[in-house]
Length: 281
Image (cartoon, rainbow, N blue to C red; front, side):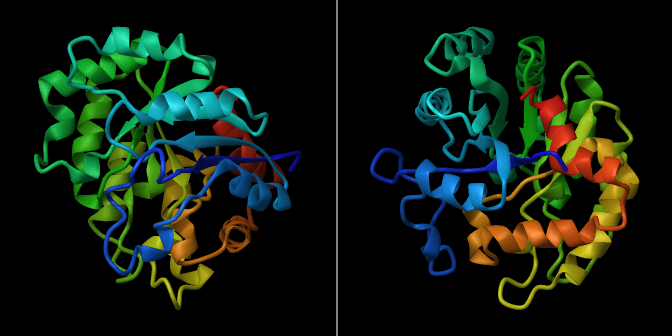
């Protein structure tokens, strides 16, 4: 590998933007500031040469700050921000984001679809119009969904062929239980569409946080490899959320172990090439 790209991480400063999803005892270790300086330290130790920072706040306030961070940092090559897909003026909102400091680093949009109560939210006409606007702007759309939402995501991707859909965390498969179906079948349905790619990210926190082993992740990674192929898969650390279950270097070591039997070119795609192409880094 000539360089490592981390296609999925977060940063936050609770003094600036609250993270209202960080509640309860289990998530308590995340209820502190995780700044870009800290990320740079752990990522640089693992020889990361470029990264994509991803939104965590539902609403317009966070994205300008992420763009400004990227504007002043050589490591962060792209930003996946937030925009209201149901806003009739979304095209203007996206154009306005690009006029901000760091706006040239905007590469995608994401919304916490996993929290929507409507199981068909992604295929609502107003949402599909918003998704089409994201594609028309030359951006990609990151999917953060549950396994139950995979089939609806596939329907949305089929309805908006001009937009690249990026599946975060492989759709959060039920790794801790060891169950494969219907996740594996639904993943294949999404992967059958040419405008979809996926991230090998966020898997350690879908396993048993205290006892997971790379072998627990292997069946799910192998299914993703067979469905998408290396040219449509990319590595993401999901830092700092991953720290609930593993350190940054442990996440990378697991991903390296699970792809060790691939060719050098295939590993290069997963750990750099796919993200570089999809996010135009």
